[in-house]
Length: 471
Image (cartoon, rainbow, N blue to C red):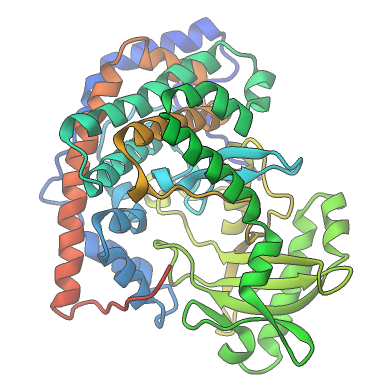
């Protein structure tokens, strides 16, 4: 079973001229300036109700950590409220052209990653919410995240506008460039460290270039061996995951008995069938040594997430995998359910479609939990050259350059799966869409602040529990 994002008004089998005509014609029905609109009506769902519905399916003892993290700032709330924004975006104008969406394309979900060939790449990282849908939604989530982060840093209105314009202009111009490229050229396109330095290095100050070089070096050091040293220790001569509750809880401390361990061992063995044969051969050379539950992110807190320690040739040859629960995408109520048999396959297939290159251990499996319910998971390496920006450390010029890099990266991902010719023709060569999203992003940042305040008030009033925890 596969999903085809390229439906609606676009068609891969029309000529480029016909596809461009479709894109230009869409301007009449959905003017580019209309994307500035955001005016929540009286029937807007209560954002706290949306968040609580998500929490109802999660581990109850971890939900207070989720609320605690979302209360910390409007930006942290934004990161955890993808479902709220999906509901809001469903009421905004759309052209009818679909791509594979990230579904949570905020600025911190773009980062440095390792390719299988050991090149340092810049790409989208988080695909928990991926589904085919309106291309505009990812762009709007990125734009609004830049404003939310810019406000947190004290940037002025003009500085924030410049940051959003740069990001959206980069998306638009990159999409137009991809529209003129052949299918294979688009498929092979990828932004490695050298490409980023060549295309965006000149826009950074000398200090910014130094920070980028340090970030790249740090990303290379964030590998399996580094996280192995950080998360494990030797106990009675055996390598074990070190407890750090509630953020890291070994399975033996969490669920005594051998049944949970058998289930996770079975998950790892069966998930290997979703890998390429050569990678499955590599996985089979490792043995499971220990496993633990790990709290991750902001929006994902409360989902079932396991880290699994595997050892190869000896105890100094580790592989750390993360098995993360995959639930229905927050986009599904608004764009339709996945065509895949499991949510884990949905995540993995979307990631493989949008990323230039993906983790060699990326796969999926469905297992039966202790409560008898069947749950979907996707599996990947816990850490493999991952470099994350610190938004709070950015100055306006640096965030503007970073936003432009994110815009180009998102366009590349969308160009692989959507009608790049129609979307590029719709966007055009002017800045009408760019300016519209400046207005939208500010309006949505206002709404995000109101929603964040509602959560803080609900916690203060005792309606929702919150607990401070690191991460």
